[in-house]
Amino acid sequence: MKPPVAHFVEHFLRTCLDTFTTRDFVKHFASMGIRMTDKQALEYILNNPYVYQLEDKSFVTRAGMFTGAYFSIKPTAQEVAQGLFVVGDRCLPFVDEELLPSELIFCADTEELSAKVGVFDSDFAIDVYQLFGEEYAPQYIASDPANAQINFVDRNFELPATVSLTGFDLEPLVRRFNFTEGDRLLCHVIDWDLGIVGVQVQHAHNDVFDTSVQATKRLEWYAFLEQCLLNSFSDVGPCMSIGEQLEVVFVDQRDKLCVPDCGSVEEYVMRYARKVGLEHYGVETRLWHKGKEVPAIGSWNDEQMKLINEIEWVTMEMRALYTTPDCVYDEFLRDMYFCRKDDLDDLLDYMFTEDFSFSKAQRNRLLLHINERNAILSPCYNWFADQKKGPVRHDTLELYRNVSALAFRIECSGGALEKYPQQELVILSQLNGHLMRMISTFETDEHIEQEADALMLSLEGMRCTFEDIEGTLESAFESQRLGQFKVRK
Image: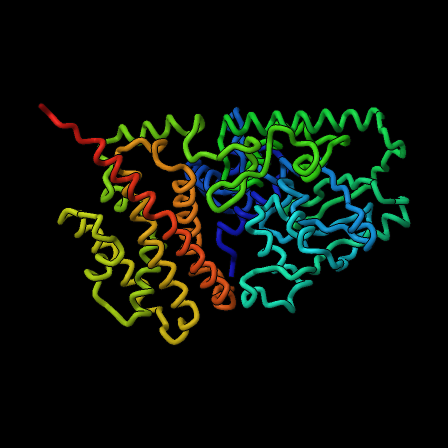
């Protein structure tokens, strides 16, 4: 059977190295016998996470932006002693984050470096994954094939004193290029789609008081990277992840940062950062002004917040009606089937808490939509095959309805969001986003059943986190609500 158009589009946007326009995109697929309008092409392009739009309204893919771009890795003494280097977060933001570090392929000239396992203390293991967010480091360590024998769920993801990490063999670099401790690996992406990275050796200067031109340029590189990060904080605020923050910087300054005399982000954060640090952002970590709290509202989004507050028709009901994606309705329907129920009126009441007061017309519109989805899903549902996924889905949706109701209530209150406790507001947004991502993958993720125990453990953590912030945000909401009433004399 011929693959769907989306398959060809994704392949193109993962492999295209040249800049292109919407018209180029349409012509490319027309040559393959696939017809699409300019509007359809633009939707494909703009909805794809692997594409950047340029100022002249042309586009470039991540593959096009980062293929050939230089970045460096400096193996530590611990790694050199075991004859390998661990990838960890050191390839951010240049490679596809969807690939596990152990899945990347490293080549020196035409020789592929073999995978090799080393044993490291847990502090080293966490440090080498910290740019993914220290909170996610245990999950990356658990996903390493070298730790397949450890049941991290039973350990509540607490790391043992030492862990195994998959790395890549340094022996060919020692044999062919005289690699020694202190030397640096100058890397560049050869194939972004397949995760192939080229490596060459940069020898260190032997003088302890290294004043070489190369060392001076590298110090200038660290200073420039810091200024770029500070600028990004003002321009775009804290991004969705540290990787995305770095992506913004390296895309904008590729010509100055992706050079042979580059340092590494890891070394910058650990040794050279003066004004930038790893700071808490709700339950996650971000690069931010060192020692300062990362706020939810700032110069990068205050105009957007003001605009939202000025739109008086944005009620909770209207927001729910027009912004709830079909995947949410679909999973609530499957949860209804799993619970052996069939009343769609009751389902609507369960989906939207008592905070929502739909008009009769709005309620009928929602019921009609749910009926349409039900007609599609009900004949295909298999209760017996849902026994592992069903409980995970049920608990996820239960938490989501409470989190999203509070988020809607705050967003539609008309109050100034900057007056809410910022870290609690950030955490609420993170919980809402994470739960939505889980819901959106229930139907397509083939591994949910195998990961059910780990997901339930994660949900319990999120539930406790929500309970910790709920009271504080409710109090702030009431204060904002009461502050909107004025007593007339």
